[in-house]
Length: 326
Ligand code: FES
Ligand SMILES: [Fe+2]
Image (tube, rainbow, N blue to C red; front, side, top):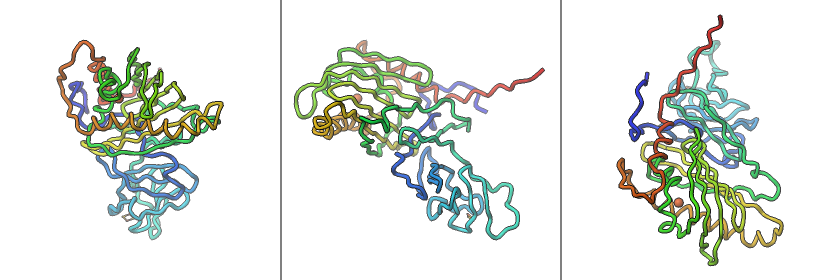
């Protein structure tokens, strides 16, 4: 049992939290995808009834990978090797040539929640249940807002390199060419928030006076609420594949506003600008290294506080206290 507090920067393994494994539209009923996250081979599928499910990849019978040739039948996935079936909780529901289902015929199952048009899975190295809920974005699916414009990048980095962006005040001018008027961080339980306003200079010229609130909900999922020339919601979701690789998904929702023709004309360009701003960070994340003792100055943001916030997701899950009735 892990009992000692880990060193702040000894973040080996993968943090606890909800992680996005896809946008909902990428997984139709009956789809079966072999995936790899957290250094593990897994299978992601959508049942006939429409529920997204994720299980460990390997069949407990003789080890076939359920994601390569497995088939959805109703609410179950059928192994391609000997046709044993497993439900979304990983329980074996049928062995077609046996009278009894072996009691150990079970595949480990991952908690899944699907909100805001994204599929999230809960990762906890101790196997504990989810400790918080993914917030519902009221703009998703609402009249007056666009659908997700989204994309995915594979980046060779550790996720904490991405998270440090929250507190990095000094990179706005050199990386984004953005003038920051005000900047504040708030750390609140599993949330780390950046509140910031200033002037951005879009690719097409002119200037955009903006204010934003970017909130991490746990170590791998961030929603940015941005007000400016147009109002937008940006999701930045990064999920570890293995120790050196992260899949980074990002998506944009845009408010159409009162004048749809004006917004239509600008929306594509606006999203392109947001994407470019995001990619400016990505180019840095891809090639930077992690300095355990960075040479910070008094003008830098609270990067070490951010690191302490992040380290909480590597702490052992507190044991659930048993209630003893008198
Ligand atoms: S290996 Fe899956 S049913 Fe045999
Ligand atoms: Fe940035």
